[in-house]
Length: 401
Ligand code: AMP
Image (tube, rainbow, N blue to C red):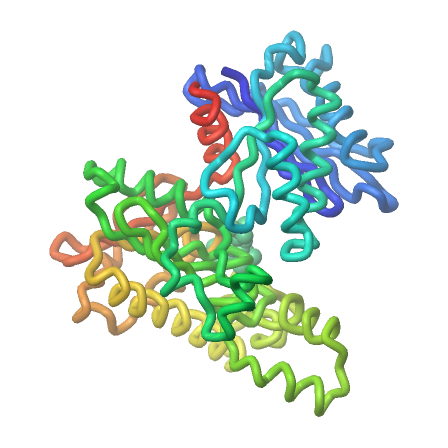
């Protein structure tokens, strides 16, 4: 079964074409970026190793999907004979509110749910919907499946999803914690259980997705029980540019003393905070901050220390929330690649059951692997995430493939 995965953002459309019947092979992948602004261009590569990169005349998502479709059947770069070989399109969608609890086939009703969540996800949902509508036009008759970032967390109970604010704000205005990165947390927890050879229904897992955005999830029996992101992705651990948890009164105080508007504070907390704001070297990339810290930059060392400490606190909290643990999983850019960060996060936690094997932790690999010591009470694993593949797998499952 050939499945196209589409991730339509504010100014880009990313795509990957999988042949699920041929060992989930990636036939082609790429993106069109700077849509709607100067310098729109496309990057493309296929399984034969052929690559192309260059400007394209694309002004909106529909034109982007049209250009992608043409490339997939292009005599030179194409990987399929006809578009009819594509049996389904899986879409990454950010917010499904309370009404979507699993990947679903896109219907008019599902599109309405997506629209109802525009106000909670103004930067993503409108573009996700545009991507779906583009595919409906370009790939006529091909089923579209929506895979929602929030869906995996719909299993959270009220004790973890409610905020301590008047209950009407939940019942009337749906203000609650939703959680994000759900596709990644679902994928890596399933992969960890499979690798460990135990049914996920019997396991307690903590997944630490540490990329540019970062979130930690407590997974009980294969379902999300609690997660660090909330109404929006701003809550939780310190991230590349987001503050993570803070006293809400900080917001009122900053507005008052700095004369900032709410948009200014929104921008400050989402785009200028986190590692970028704390390290002070103009980069949100942990690699740059680690390098500067290694050269003696004390502010960068402090930022890394704080980053690791906040993750450690969540791991401790979720160990208590789950009432024990089987596997701790590290994933995403920093979680998969930074052995120093993983070691810093788990510093001092040997006695609590998290014993790293230093040599195993230091190995660089793109494979799923165990990095805990043989006598560690809790298994610690690195599981490379693959959201595109997860979306393709969920899409196949929805269509009974
Ligand atoms: P992602 O959002 O999963 O693509 O992760 C991207 C982020 O992961 C980057 O901005 C870096 O902060 C981080 N990252 C990737 N590789 C490394 C590495 N080797 N060491 C530390 N951080 C890394």
